[in-house]
Image 1 (cartoon, rainbow, N blue to C red):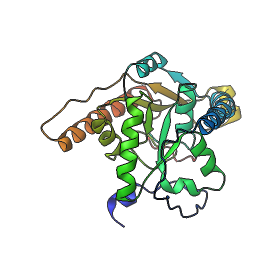
Image 2 (cartoon, helix red, strand yellow):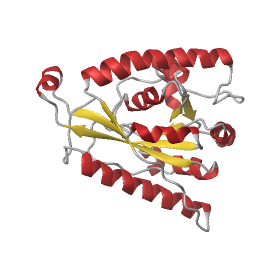
Image 3 (cartoon, rainbow, N blue to C red):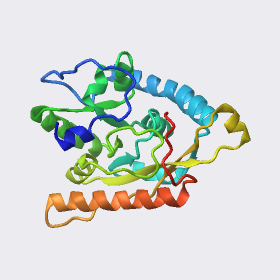
Image 4 (cartoon, one colour):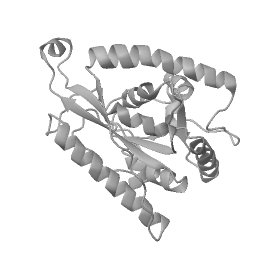
Length: 256
């Protein structure tokens, strides 16, 4: 297995997935009105149960920097976040709801029993594994971004529960942004020490989701250099922010 393949495998797996093969004419961004209505209801239910009840009440999730979300209505955005909890993408999507958001995910996630269908209905977009599908995916992605629909990409690719700091980024999110002439909006999950009440519920750290200001892409001579520069810039911004605001500076081994 090559390095990129290794980087795209989840470090945290609890469910065995079925093999998934996409149809030749697979539609990544489904425009069917009935599907969109189902998607709305799915995310609404997730916001009530997984965002408010599990996230806010049980996990002590708090949100900072919501004022930056107003920029999403003005331009095309790729959203990026550290991948530290099985619910982190759901929390980001629920925060932005009722505004529509898509979330890229491994194609293999479609093979998760029941969860695969739920993730798809909620706006999950599988990242294709073949060249032909990738061409179609990139075209549909660019079309969707042109409608100013935000797309969330986890540039760390794999989940590593409660990891301290920001791990190495893969290039996908920044390739999407440069190809579609989109801006980047970083989201950073940090950890705070639990208070007495929260320690009674769970010994794990409290989680805060911080929305950072948009980052514009500076164009260089080549597309590759542009992607590398914006990837490194966003990684530095998120890393410095994490260590400035998180209570935990050492590795936490607790699982999600």
